[in-house]
Length: 204
Image 1 (tube, rainbow, N blue to C red):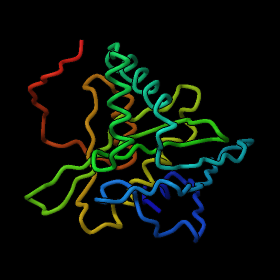
Image 2 (tube, rainbow, N blue to C red):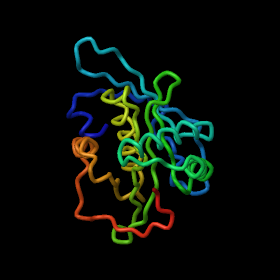
Image 3 (cartoon, helix red, strand yellow):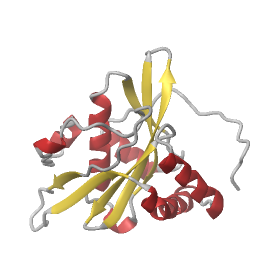
Image 4 (spheres, one colour):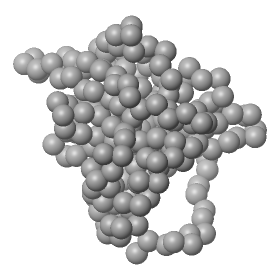
């Protein structure tokens, strides 16, 4: 269990049968998305009900929801309207090819209530992969209920268990102060780097 999770007095129980599973992301030549990891979250607040958050790797059937979440993410954080067809094809490309990345989704009941995407970048300095956390989105009504924390906890645990992974990274829109506070609160540190790019498919 991650240190930040303990510090905030949250409790997670992961049954033994789910421990030590293989991650479908960044494991070349393998795509096994069948497992489901139940993470029980309990807030230490009077009268707060027990909430069961299921975390799993996304599959092809989740493409429409993921595309919708990405549309909302772009609107909320950057005031951008993404082209639906291009976005849907981009999501489906990841879901069809684990070498490109893995979407993880959180569910309550049968409803998807959050997502993130993991891609990889090789670091020659460290002789290992950084896992990049991208496309983080939790709908407004589910925020503040441990959804992102559950997703991040799983990703951090998976990464820490793999010798070839040297760390986690993410980028955030410069004006998204709320997201920055969240990331720093769970232990992600701001780096000295800034991002420069040449965008051949510039978004409007």
